Structure formats: structure tokens, C-alpha cells
Image 1 (spheres, rainbow, N blue to C red):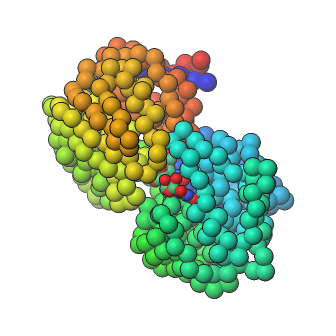
Image 2 (cartoon, helix red, strand yellow):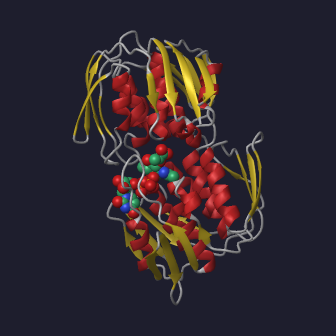
Image 3 (cartoon, rainbow, N blue to C red):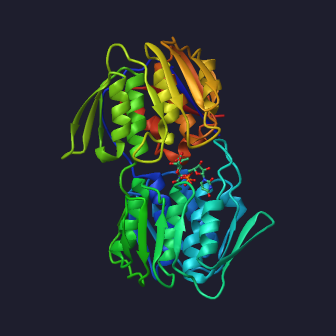
Length: 422
Ligand code: EPU
């Protein structure tokens, strides 16, 4: 297992390009199960979660070629077993995204129950209830979801009790082969959902309402993909780099992200006094942190609200702000694991229920700390940029699950970071 040693405080300078979006690439790769023949992808980020997804597909019989340098993946979905095994799904909850396309194409699937994770219980009951309404028989057996289409897949009306990103993606993929129209109400509005829907549309499915709470899907046979499917830039990576610039009190330019997708993040940082120079044509964003950072109050929310995947990073910045910040986490019940680690760096944070009360400015001092989940690991790396002295972040594999060598990118901007094996 690797650890990162950060010598702070860091000063950053330069321009950094954003890699492909993890949470868009994952459903896109799983959507290859729907197609006949080879499917190609480009701008695929080099991440552990991508590796895990490809291993799940391979364990079912699919063949793939992943050119990590070029960021291309080609998948030949020659499926022999319709099983997503525990061995892989336990490493990545998004393995549940195999369910929708397997059921759509083959009418059966056995997918390991993802189980809980560091940020909360994260059940998949909304996915399963919606599938049942579409005519899927589901049983939970020895830790697996055993699903079978009984008497044909039915397009129907589904209303999610709470908007769910992967739930909406799973049902959209399932609906591509149902009999009749599927209407999803309280659908997730996230750009990742819109992108997947756009790709399905490009290849023949009739979908309306993407980016609204009501998505309608009319099944159509998918065309054979005649061109590579593009993975767009990662909005959370772009946002994380804003947090890094603010932590290092340095001006950097973030390149490649769709700025509309990170509007809520930009607005939150503007409230803290950060200035931005945006150029939508060149997709560049110059981040200009202020001399004195102001406090902020944010509440995580589904898109277009402030993303839960940026809560840990902005909380870290709040430690450096002049005054008391309030960070409310409304999506996941246990997403403050990073707080205890930040306290080891002398951050002043209390957690009451789903709110973190952050008193700043704290003079962060380096110490050994431990990454607990993906976004928490990014926040600890960012804290290390701000802290005086040496910060050692252990269990950095969480970071590599979802960021394409963030440490290397920050090093290119001037941070002093060493990766060591532990
Ligand atoms: N929920 C249920 N039952 C369900 C589904 C969801 O109770 O069947 C609850 C969840 O527990 C949560 C809320 O509904 O409280 C929303 O969860 P959602 O289903 O939208 O989350 P997800 O699809 O499992 C995706 C991202 C997460 C991101 C969330 C929220 C992927 C692969 N994962 O998860 O990304 O935090 O949406 O935006 O797209 C990350 O990248 O670090 C990450 C955790």
C-alpha cells in the first residue's frame, strides 16, 4: 500500500488538465453490456475503479484492451456468465451498475450486494424496487442479488423516493429493452446521468427529459457503435483542484472542465473570497485565492446543489478561513470520517449530527494521518499542502481509486510530495 509524504506549506503555480470523469466512465463501461460487438471509449481515466469495472466485465467473459497511456478502452462483451462477483463488487459499489444492462440484454443477473462503505450504509433498495415494478423477480441469496425477468420487461412509471444517481442510470439502461415506455420521476439531474442518457440516445434509444426530474425512455434496438464513446472531464477533480489552490493560497489554472457543472462549487468559493477568471470557450478557470479566506456555510445537495463529493475538500479549506464555517452533509450519514484526521493536524472542528462546525483560522501542523475513503483522501492531501511541516497520508489507495495520479498533478504545479510504499 502506498502513502504520500507532503512537505508543506506548498506554493502552486501553472495550468493543470482535468482527466476523464470517474462517475461517468463507470456507467458507460457497464453500458457496453447492452451492445452487440466491440465498444470503444476514449478519455478513460487511469483509476483503480476503472480496473475493477473491467475486471468485473472480464469475469463475465468480456474481453478488453485498455491503453492506459492513450486513455482508450475497447470492450468485446462476449458474456458467458451473468455474475458480478463479490470479489470485485466489494471493492467498488458501482458494480451494481452491472444489474441494469445484464437484465436488459440477458434477462438474468447475479450481482453481489455492495454492502456498506465508509461514508454510510448506501443501500440499493431504490434500484431493486424500480426493477421489480418493471417485471424483474429479485431475491437476495447468500449476499447476492439474484434477478430474473419474469414474462418480459415492462416499461412503467417509476418514482424514486429520493433521487439516486446510479439508480437512475441502472433503470435507464434496463429500460432500453423494456416493452413500452419507462417514465422515471424524481430522476437524478447529475451531469453523469445526462451524459449516459446522451450516449444511449446517440445509439438509437429515444430518451427525453435528461437533466430534469422526469426522464422518459422508449426502447429501441441499440445501433452498433461506429465511433468511440467519449468520457467527459471530471467535475469533482476540477473542483478538488480549486480546493488545492485555495489550501496553498496560490493561483493556478484548471483546464478542461465544463464550468456549468461546477457552478455551485465556484459560488461557494466566491463566498469565501476566492476570485475566478473563467473562459468558457477554452474551458479554463483561473483560481485566485484571497489573502484572507472568509468562512462559509454550505449544505450538500443533489445536482445542481453543492456536491457531497466536494464536502471534505471545502471543509478542509474552511479550517483555514477567518471565522466559523458550517458544513451540512445531507446525502450520506457518515461522511465526516476525515474530521478526526484533520483534527490530528490541529484543525478545530466539531460534529453535531450532520453538521460540522469549523473554527478558523487553524494553523495546521503536519502529522501522520490516514485516508478513510476516496474524497476524504483528497481532503487530507489538500490539508497537507496547507500544513506546516511533514504530513504523511497512509492508505492512499483510496485516492487512486478515483483520481488519476492527483499527487503527480500537484507535483507538476510545484507541491513537494513523495509517494512511498508502506
Ligand atoms: N439511496 C438509498 N437507496 C438506494 C439508493 C440510494 O437509500 O437504493 C440513498 C443513499 O444512501 C444516499 C442517497 O440515496 O443517501 C443518494 O445516493 P445515490 O444513489 O445518488 O448515490 P450513488 O449513486 O450510490 C453516486 C456517486 C457517488 C456520489 C453520489 C451522490 C457513482 C459511481 N457514485 O453514488 O460518488 O457521492 O452519487 O452524488 O456515480 C464518489 O465518487 O466519491 C462517490 C461516492
